[in-house]
Length: 520
Ligand code: ADP
Ligand code: ZN
Image (cartoon, rainbow, N blue to C red; front, side):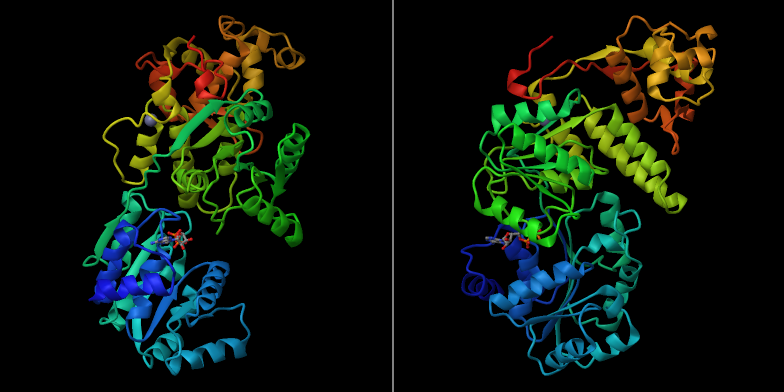
């Protein structure tokens, strides 16, 4: 019965033929008055999971959503479909809010979106008691988790919805929740009796590749030209300046590239976005500002010229490729500078110690994917608590297994050089010392007279950079927040003492495309 009604609404109101696998079960659960906890990747179709029950059940559904912009997009989209939806938030005028409240009272609304800070006010709660409520939907439920990346203190109070409205079913939804976050959500929102629906996070049609940076723009260009010529793609950069420079350069090379970042006027952004959506083969070069709510099915590649700060970010950004299920590539060029820059940024970030630690842990998990020598997809999925029993066969490490080398001696030399120079210098200087270069700076500090001067001539500068990158990425060295000097972490003691050996990834001069990779 519930299932039939749900399908009818899906066809008639939303114009879709069938449910995606877990949607039907989730929707039936809520229509029948049960609680549900839904873990589904972005783009999986979470919204319908509460919108359809909201239409089938009697009364108004209260949707809690932390982003006012998304709230407004969703209500606008619903209204276009002829569904009666509205929101209450701080960007509306007092009279607009009052009018929406009045509509809710008279039973005109099927969905009412409320910002969390407003919902938890005592007057809102007592007002809600006068309404006939069909359900509570808690979107972006990971905001309740302190371990999660967008913690909202108002979300903590949402547990009382259950106490104050025990008969109203609740559905909590999120796209990002590792095991720990998941447990925290269930506990904090009192969802222990909720039915949990976990969809696979695997995107088998996306090929994951992370290549060592040497000439990133050129590497990007050859990647696009050799594998995705005239196809739609997104290139992510960290700064607006780099977005502009990269887009300009790609255009000069004949790629139809357009910049997108928050510093451009709304006009320009809209125009570039529209071109990307409607024309063939447009490459958008963007900061992370781009992507929210963009739903283009045939994006064939997502490229990163800077390392994302977390696996969640990496997964979301790369997830914009291949929504249509066709083969697509998630490509990234990554190098020592990325590690140093992000580590330095985080060491100097605002916020309390717990927050900094969290940021560091997230970055370290991302670095783990960048440096791993086994299947990248296994690491990625494992992070989300999803398991892939076999290596995927569709990531660079599976296609061309990277070689490793016994680097204990090199690591020990690098670490002692940091120690002998009093942990006050950056990588370039350390490499000069190791390689015995008498630069003015080396002379100025008398570093030509220390025991580590010239002990590393067997490795090239690039090889040393690779060693340092991996030592920093693996946490043997810390980066100072002010000038990026390296210092030793507790962890490097056993290596210095000769009690631990270490293998490092051998960075081959791989040229970005896997197909053209030569084995050394
Ligand atoms: P999420 O919130 O999980 O990121 P959305 O709810 O925004 O995802 O849905 C992503 C896209 O998939 C939307 O364009 C939505 O209309 C579409 N969609 C969802 N469910 C279905 C379905 N059963 N059939 C076809 N399209 C669907
Ligand atoms: Zn793999």
